[in-house]
Image 1 (cartoon, rainbow, N blue to C red):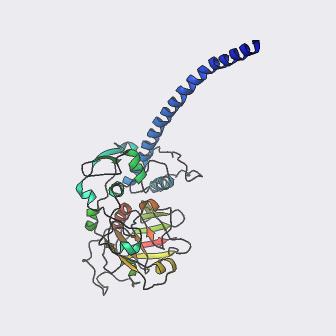
Image 2 (cartoon, helix red, strand yellow):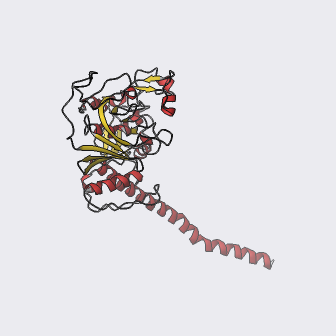
Image 3 (cartoon, one colour):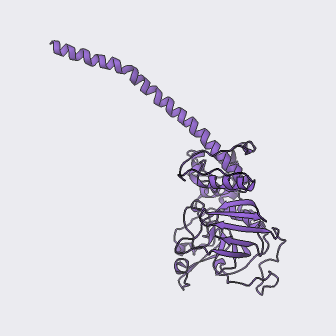
Length: 370
């Protein structure tokens, strides 16, 4: 009996002793989680502010995702380099979300960080069914966005998961009139692609079928251009330098770096052509000849599919041809893949970046791939 009472008192004592701990356990995780959520929200906004600042400055971090990712660090380093400042060394772990030193940057110019955008009918006009296989894609008259979220994320240079994060529960069924929270960038407008006035335009059945050509001016070339040559969009001293190790493309005015964009380059199997090249022209809304044997082994075959223009064409909305057959600087159907996959030898950018790049080049602009 005494043993039973002693055990009972002992158990009751333990219960009373543990009550404060249980109360604290109920309070602190909630407070901690709330604090972490507040901290996370502030960090996301701070990272997005920096990414938008760099995007506006033409030192593109690629897709905006509210993180201090690898290309945000690279874009910031090149931005500082362009100003004659010492870049900060990036963290050893490229996947870490470490905030860089932003002293001296006019980040207050990005205000607000996010804006409310009202979806229009025009936003959804370029959305349609997009099958996965080139064979099925070749049956379509245009290669359009996969869904409304795909169109909106490209318009505002952002990651689709980030758009979902900013608009919980709203991105699965977007319709005209919906109010969405988006990054405060200069929107990428598909309708304005045709207004780009590069130094010269090219016309061919497929842009990756252009032959090597001698260094002649557009007027001297025997093949007629789609439109008469426009006024030069860049001075003779403009040049492009593509670093295949860092996956960054730099635009130089003389020796001065004036812009930079993340790129995807070729793989070990289909390497981008190292060396010095020149811009031979620009094709807007290009068609693409999908020949798997050519893409993988460099051998032309009779088994191919001709893919029509559109934002989800494999080469995107614009092709900058180099004087190397089959090689160009172009857009992409998958902006998420920029810098994180391999091309078939070409230089690939996000559509919103390649149109900005095209306005800076003209016929004969030097391109170094190293």
